[in-house]
Image (cartoon, rainbow, N blue to C red; front, top):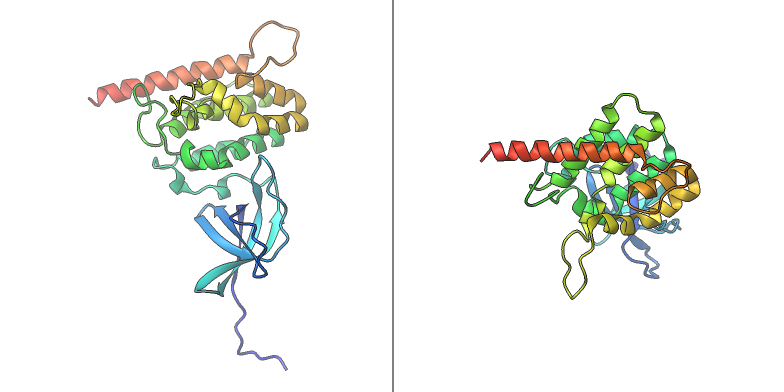
Amino acid sequence: MLDTSIVAPITQRFPCTLEPIDRLEDPKGSRWRIRHAKGTLTVWTWLQLPAPGQPAPLKGHAVTLEIERDGLENLLVSFEHDELLPLAPLLSEACCPIPGVVRQTTDLVDRMKNPALRRFVADALLQPIARSNFWRIPASRLYHHPGAGGLAQHCLEIATMIASASGLEDADRDLGIAFALLHDYGKLEYGQPRGGGMPYVPHEKAGLILLTPLLDRLITEAHDCGLKMRELLGGERAPRANPYPLAIGKVVRAFDQLSCEANKRAHDMEF
């Protein structure tokens, strides 16, 4: 007979990224880290989960349950893999010290028309190095956007100008937004002189190095778009008949300069 006094355990379902903490052969399960819009969570699970894609993070909907195991812990009871999840629910507003930057950035990415390019940008911003640095470091310590979160704010300003520019086709607008958000990606790791005798690497080249695994997948999924994105980020020229640089690249660089100059003027007026 059904015992109606037993209260069913409460589960939570939410979109997230998932990464392994350890791969120990433990009969009690393995530990994984969940990242989502509210923060991070460590879970145990016995599920046979897909191997995290390289270089893309593992994205999908998780179902968790609180359990008593050496204190209160969380159990992952289900995971639905979904590579095309929107970016907004996967990043916390607390990532960036400047209010609104994360929300506005994710809104721009999620409105991009090209699904392959949208996933490319989302996966770039979900990389561990981007989670650690993109939202927190300055764009420049001496010239513009020098405070914490300045890099993300600067990239958002350029991307917003592109998104609101008139006369652009959807394909160029998407490429422009992607380039604007990722044009300084190399500053996340290699933009400054490196210790241990390692040579200085210009941030444009460093960004291309960091993004090459994602670019390779983009080229496989959306060939022409991927080749243009690689060129914009400093790679080899995409095949075409005319001798000119990609126009959208010139537009983004002009907006880049406008963002730098406007912030520098505002900064100088404060002192």
